Image (cartoon, rainbow, N blue to C red; front, top):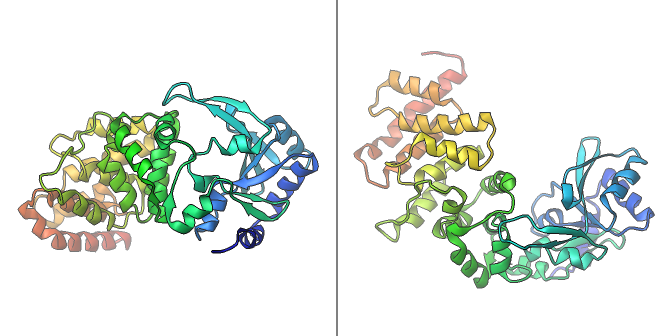
Length: 382
């Protein structure tokens, strides 16, 4: 097994001058500074590192004051959670004060207390792979809770009781699905049991960040394992109450096959992928435009996002029932050249649930749609 000291030396080479300046500034004022969470986790999982989150025992007002003195712009973004955004040129870093979280009601924001102890901050974190940190002073990676073991064993475990931790905030279940898919990790049995017991009773401590967490999951290329977890345990019913998801399939083999086929499609947009999930795993005879309006509201979609989701539904609902070039061309224009082929694939995949006779014409439809799209892209109208 690779030594974490060696990994720490490798990680230290990733730190740019702006982040190094932030770290040194806080250290010069006698404060502890660590890089924690996604950056360290992704690095150890051999994934590209994009965002660096800093944890410190400096208070938000101290962070703002000290960084401003060295010409680094700051913006408080975490409210009572004590997170400050530090902006240096084109780079931005989240800096959070150590805190303790106390939940009094599941699905409600916790009470926040700033603390001096690193361990008090680590123990509130959800998955052990998210508690691994990098110590810039000693240039080493520190793992107090066994997250590195999880990564090497391709397993996924939590800090604390999974049943309690997942009920505190349902976002952790969406995050669980993302980690399963992105890093190919298998959750420990206690986590799976907890997810099953929660099901559609899932509660979220912040509605505003459901879209953010769900989109992170939908951007993962291979989501089959995570999607299976969310569908089999009725988590989507909890995220979108009232939406007519399919509750059961006639054949026990049909759902896994449908998930596998759906996940083989190459989605380029998270909203189109979300639309696909809502369409394929629903009772489409009961789906209405109003359901997509409710989805947009639940996820706090912008006007543009809402219009795209509704347009995708209307395009699916008006798919040409016969191969007539002019009708297909009008449909492609209304749907959009960047999404028409994917909507068509979803249309036919949905037909496969009932073995509709039109399903056999998929390749011919797709061929015509591709030709029309290419002509439109080249500026040719015919």
